[in-house]
Image (cartoon, rainbow, N blue to C red):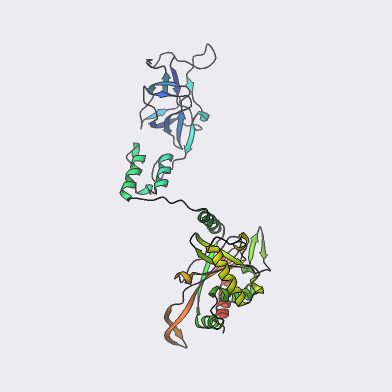
Length: 376
């Protein structure tokens, strides 16, 4: 015997819903709890499952039409069975009852809220667009009420040209997670400066050409002792000023940017720092660095000049308060003793956590850094 299924009140106090699409056509087979029809209310798009299994004998409305709550949504019966409004129904309830099935909120599966501004698309279409890299705002919908369909998304993809999906490596995913957390939780401020490159380059030449990072670290450690908030982290309402100096430096590897850490940098000479920079950089690129050699920095130095960069906006590593990058010192017009001449200056970019470091303190640290790097 046929079973009438009336449109359930899928939201508190709703009066009607629009039929979006039917998953089963009249005469088609449906199983119990299988999605039967997709409807849209003023708050959400919903899949409504069939309360019984059998053959779909009747659809209460076609796609795009509006149906009132408790109106007949569908009728499911036996193959070949005929049904017309007013005929008897199977209540699927206690013996002797004759009420049709009226759905409830629990019988409708919410897929996602549909925004009323911006492109109108069902959740599965939005997922498909995200997977294919399609901007829905640029797609013209051909579905009911201008809704964007899966075919619309695929057609837009064809117009975009071929694409290739490359899965992130575990290392790249870790890098992405750490940078996202830093960017979301730390209010970044970046201040910039320039310093005459000749004194530092001359000192490097005199020391036997150690890595530039070694000289930077050697000259920055005393500043971290002078400005302890730059060698710190935040713990709840407290600032933890680190009394140890484990300085990290950025390493460009085939797997992505990593930070190698020189522990107890304050206790090492420039030559020792240089040897450690080389060893850790090789270990990071060869994937042989130990975990403790890639974690736990209290401050970070990034030599972006090594890859051709000048100024940047470095992201503060999570668990620290500051990072400085030094760019490439190309010959440029500079002012020396009131006259324009050709010289070389290192571009400096200092990013810091604005929760604990104010702009004035940031500029003061930058000034001290410029003095330290320009000293003989």
